[in-house]
Length: 452
Image (cartoon, rainbow, N blue to C red; front, side, top):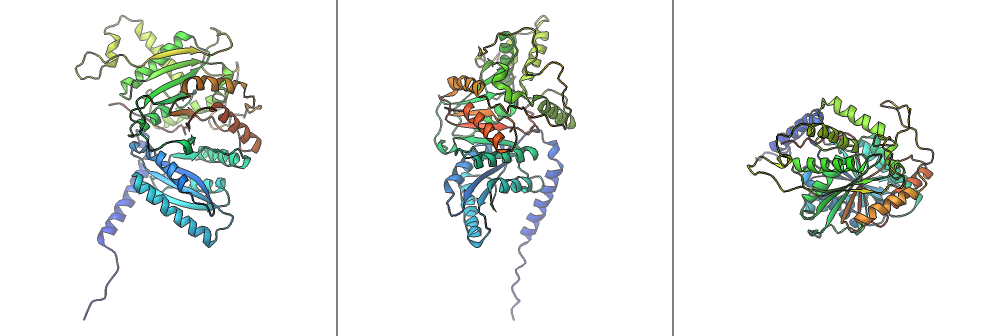
């Protein structure tokens, strides 16, 4: 006689399941203890029914794979636009999912793939952003394509996705020019990644650029940082630039050229109107984690000037050591070579008034909203693009040949069609003439502790 074959699975399957379940539970419980942000990226894009999406798959996944030195994971979610969830749509979704998995294997991307059938991109994205992830494996960053077509429906869907991501407290990376981006060529020594730091998210912009340079395609590229400030003198601006250059050198990231550009309030108004709430929310988050010390990399532009004031106070005392000791790394060498170049450019049309203090646009006697309150949307929605065009000329004169420009993404101004249209017109006018742009908007919950 013969014993009947049993298909109960192997003991290793059970052990693997229990280990994975235990790890997910522990990871979720320890999420608040993470001392360094890691890119847990949700790649979000659309394909239309009865159309092959291989080119969309490859472009999005290959760019995301260049951030994998951050040791995070990737979740690829594709929205298949279809009014009916019929058998044909489900078969196409299954085919697209397999294509995604094959590309992930070829690119060495660790993560998961899913294809969602929905009537519109915005509706599908809303469900994906809310429901993607399990336990501690929840995406903290949404990567999306910048709409290339000038259609109101595309703009409205995109702005709604930004709102969904912001509500879910996720960072956003919006890549403009991805279709024209060569993702396989190794960039030469003359190539640059230009970081344009507009008031917010400085540390996040710089860390993302640094992660890219860890990939072989960008390893030879040089990072340049341009930061805008208003209502400061040229001397203080230069000192702030030196603070940033010295901080990055001390953190052993890179020697970087820094240019501080003095601008009028109107040139960066979309980046400053919500400054108060963003700073207050950031400080509230850090205090909830028990972090009371200064951040490893300056986050807001004002952080540079605060450090500059402290440095000025310290330097007023008799120096005990040469300033070159700041550059030492404890290897026994006397000092490192001087860091990157620090420049100051004055692009203001209005004369600087020494009586005006502060670095953000703030009206006298303006009552500041408390945390949790929404800041009233500006009545004009920044539809006057004259100041935006001026800022674009400043950016274009420095970064027209850059391989990649990393730039702050302003907070969206609303989800109605006129507001979405005005928002997209502003962003497109700001980046007109640039080859490739990565718009970045942080959640305010990213933590960087680079101390060694």
